[in-house]
Length: 369
Image (cartoon, rainbow, N blue to C red; front, side):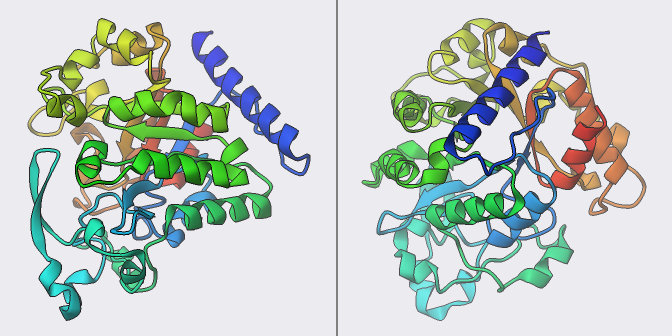
């Protein structure tokens, strides 16, 4: 009954908010089904974080679409998984930008490439998106060069238009990336994020869930974002168990993500977040050969602390599936039945929602419940 209550309250809240805003919207179903989050759009079928990827995800039935947000040199939030755009754009082919290649430390890790914070929005708009996993998702490379880098505001307008055209509400699940790093460079991504959310009618009433791997910005955002959109939720993303959240590490603290996955840590998270976002291997660990081992109690422990659990990331290729579910067609093969079986296993544990690179398969898994 606990899962039914959580999901029913969410659906009822969404319906009430939407119908209060305008009667032209179709109310979401009150059927207590887990939520399907489109990870960087439909990144298994289109280059990630392009409008094409978001469009495909929406067409395939995603409940929410995800924009990862990083700032440009002039402070505009754009949709990229990380500030380093070496793998996701054609910047390396641009001789006029060759001298901007450099090495940066981001959250304690050295990266070499080209970074959004060294480009104005106008300069970024001259670049074209590329498939990040080009050797694995060769079929996506046919779209290389067709799309630009969308801003967060362009993405909001696009989702709002899709929502109006389709007559169903589509949620947004943005991640505010690398907050400590960007603040050290003189940016304030949280303030920019709040201004944008407040400026758009759609983000004032549509389902909204804000993600971060850091605790400080979630504490800052919690009341502010809910003042703009009362149904908004905040998700604390969880990295490797032996890693320390970047904001805590910057303060010299030693608390790890693993510490925060314990019952007392989960109770503390509930102060500033509504949801945790662990990796799939935090729910069911894998051995060195990629085979599933015994499940953990993290889902039940989080629920006991009053938290929802939205895990990442379900991917359809054999390479990413647990060994028990792979077929003999090779790492790059799209394994439909294996992917659905994997998702169903996590849903059986009581998962409230999940990120997937292929929302069509996520939708099929959920609709079989």
